[in-house]
Image 1 (cartoon, helix red, strand yellow):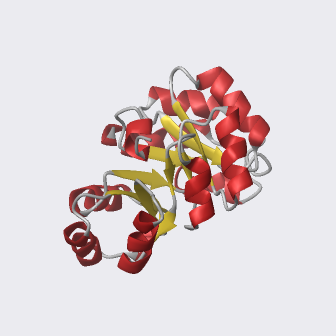
Image 2 (cartoon, rainbow, N blue to C red):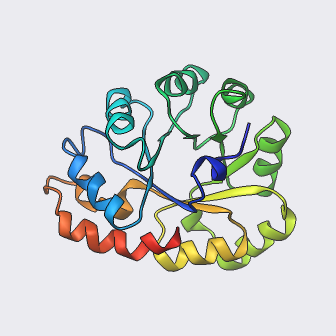
Length: 206
């Protein structure tokens, strides 16, 4: 099974979308992201219907994945729906085994020990999460310790942190939902022009 970066279709960035509860209307946001070059997205694993909708509407123009899986059943469920890739904040042998042969998968880790464990149970990509707690020196050290490992740095990352991660250790970066969708943390409605400005900061990473 190819790694997660290959599943991004040559892109080096994906963004998470908020849950359907926090962002009830999302299609216009997807169009804005397409226009600004952010063309790989992950939806909450629990929002299966939204994942279906995203694949139906945008599946030929964007890479559509799922994030936040914690059980083998969740991995199999999103794979059956057609997700292009899957991520998790944790690593278990059961998660990796469930994804094997079905869908590109990046389990979560943060320390060298956790990365080593993920590789030991069969992971081909490892998600560093939450990357924003790391410093540049830590990223360089991980890059030296695991030079041939496909690391995906995910977190509440500003643009400069994405660049630092890609320069030091990561093959790709993931934006947690509140980076591009801060309104989804509260009652405010989505401001599409503000979303466009935020997306423009990151679109050139691809």
